Image 1 (spheres, rainbow, N blue to C red):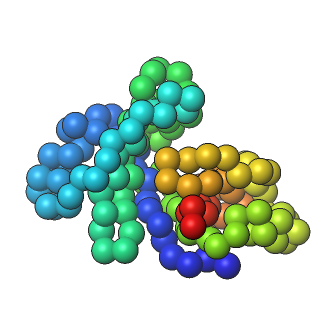
Image 2: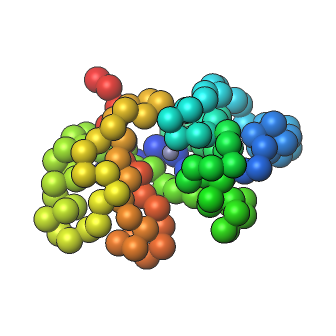
Amino acid sequence: MIKKIDHIGIVVHSIEEALQVYEGALGLGLTDVQDVPEQAMRIAFLPVGGSKLELVEALTAQGGVAKFLEKRGEGIHHICFEVDDIEAALQDLAAQGIRLIDEQPRQGAHGRIAFLHPKSAHGVLIELIEKPR
Ligand code: ZN
């Protein structure tokens, strides 16, 4: 079902500051920065091999990212797995008793995405992505 780790999401106070480490010190390339106003966040992607880091910054003091920062501080937020068929994956996982945050996939920055509840994955927030063909 899972093809690879598409990206690892890291919540930061400031993408600009975080880029000094990830782009500057570690030498990763930045591909794109996008605002996702409906999630009150800005995201930046840095490819690493066949995968990516996704830096996530809160756009407002409300919203999930701001809450995460307040509660847990900066750090790894989620792991995203690429799947071929996101509907089939969600159906299969639900049938196995995995708690879903998104019952139906929604449009993300690079494909259709859905999140699984961290309570069903030993504390890790898991995102699934199906890339457009
Ligand atoms: Zn993500």
